[in-house]
Length: 145
Image (cartoon, rainbow, N blue to C red; front, side, top):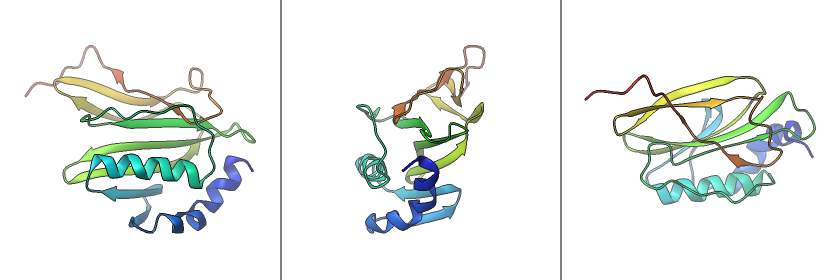
């Protein structure tokens, strides 16, 4: 079963995440949780229930973007599966997206005074299993407080 098939079944499989409120409409779906540990559990459950192969993944504790990972669809490389966790004002949002396999500048975020961009580049990012991706430091754009 390729990601295209999985993406259609995401909502069906999500009933196994019954402890989370699923919000459809912001990408494929997102889950809001209160704690970083809950976000990590949600990511692992999404990967497990969607039956996505993965390499070892780790969370960057205490960061504004503790996790981002992608996988190129093994049956249709025009698409990717993208998961990321973003710290928000009251907890964490966990996004699970099925996107076009094209250059995507998702958003900018900061860690301390440094500005980073979360970017997917198909010329660089070609993994066929869930692989972590990190923000790119924007050297010329420090954030001043």
